[in-house]
Length: 300
Image (cartoon, rainbow, N blue to C red; front, side):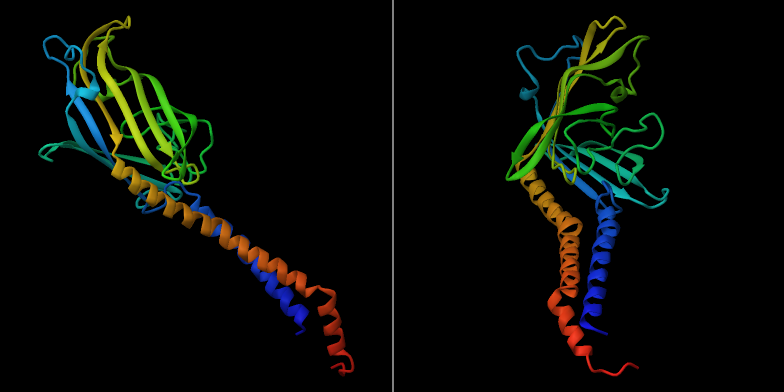
C-alpha cells in the first residue's frame, strides 16, 4: 500500500467519523429533554389571602409587603414506559414557611412530551411547549406546564447574566386562572382572573435552560360574565434567589461547553484532519515520491 492510499483511507475515515459523530451524538444533544434530564429552581415567594369578609387586600399594601415563602420546583424527564422519542415529565413543586421551614403545601404534575422539541403531541395542549426549546429563536413560544396553560411567552430582549447571554421571554397581561381553584365552587358565568399578570423566563438560547425566573400576580379575582370584579382571593409571586441564579449560570455554562464540544468542536476537528489527510495524499510531492518508490520494482 502506498502512502497516498493510506492517507486517502485515513482522510475518508476521519470525514465519515465527523459526520457520524455530529448526526449520531449531535442529534441526541439537540434533544430538549433527554432521558435522565433534570432541572431545579429555588425561588423566594410571596403570598397572602384576601379578607374573607370583604374580599379585599389590606389597604395601601402590595404583594411586595406580603410574607415570604421558600419555593422549590424540580422537573425531571425519563424515557421509561413511554413511546420511543417521547419522555415523561415529572414536575414537583413545594412551598415551605420561610420562618419555620415547615412544608405548607406541595403538588406533582406529570406530562408526556416529544423528547426533541419538548412539545405536547396530543390532547388539548397539542403543539404547546413544556418549556422553551433548545436553539431558541427570538419569537413567541406557547408554554403549558404544571403552573400555566397555553401561555404565549414572547421574546423581549437579550440580557447578560453573570457573563452568560440569555433571552428574556415574558407574558404581560390578564391571566385566566380558574383552573387553580378547582376545589372552589363558582356561580355560573364566573371565572378567576389575575389582572396584569407578569411571567418572565431568562433562557440560555442554545440549551433552552432557564437561568432566572419570575412570576407576579397582584391578585386573583373572581369576575362575573360581564367582566365585573366581584372579590379577591389571594395574591402571589416568586422570583429566583441570587444564590440560585449563580448556581444555575454555572450549571448552564458547563452544559453549554459540553454541548459545543460534542456537537461542534470534535466533529470539526475530525473533519479538518480528514481534509488535511486527503490534501496531503494528493499533494504533488507525495505523488512524485510514490512514483519514484515504485520505479524498477517488478510487476507481480
